[in-house]
Amino acid sequence: MITIAVKDAAGAILARAAHESEALLCFDRDYAEGDVIEITSDAAHLWLQPDISVLPGEVYLPAGRMTWRVPSGEYRLAYRPGAFTEPRHIVTARALSAGEIASVRCLSRNPADLRGDTDFFPHCTANVETRNESCFAARNVIDGLRHNTFHGEWPFESWGIGARTDAWCLLDLGREAELDRMALTLRADFPHDAYWVRGQVALSDGAAIEFPLQKTGERQFVDLSGHTARWLRLERLVKSDDPSAFPALRQWEVFGHDAALDE
Image (cartoon, rainbow, N blue to C red; front, side, top):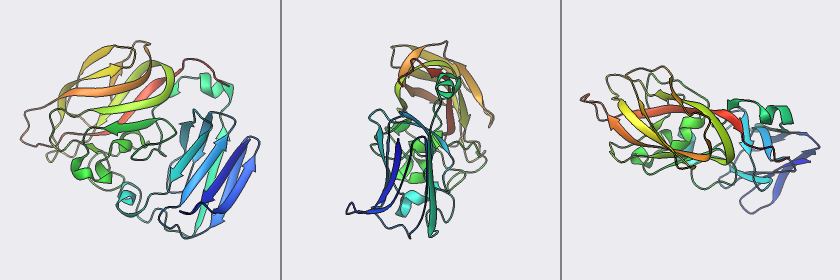
């Protein structure tokens, strides 16, 4: 069973839908600060679209429950103009099949990821986000978009490091997965942007894989050699000698499959 409930800041239920395998909710409301969408599910792997302003994607619920805080205020700058302001909303959640869960796919993509603590995965965090602005937040690198020829508001949001030389970004998948390779798409608003010439990805199994990077806006692939890990951390990123102080990451894709079926 999958249940979707929209609640206000006081916890009152404003709308609800439930279905054995695919819950579909349509409701009318002007979102207010503090509104949340709560989803409970017997299945841990869901295909989810929490709002028409957000691309659909896969989420993993280790406890069978997730709370999606409707972005408000400055947080909305990481989404398309006018996001969450229309009076009618739809929410869709369906259980993934065993075949989908076992398939090789992009495990990192989660357009529903939020800044701060979450109870669903994948989830991205970092030790720095430029000026603490949402359009430079770590969650942007798994939002499913690779538009990278500009910087700032949607669809050009990115992970910005505020010129820190010790910047790192951590991707938590929420469970063990067998990893084939990853792809990094750098922000390529040249000459405003610089780029990294090399970096390292540390894995939760103890491995550390170094890789080179080039000045390009195309995907750059890194072999992960079938390592089994729950999380990955980009670190030791070395900036080019470009005069710009602003290297940034637009998208981080990790390809592989779940290490074991849990349902």
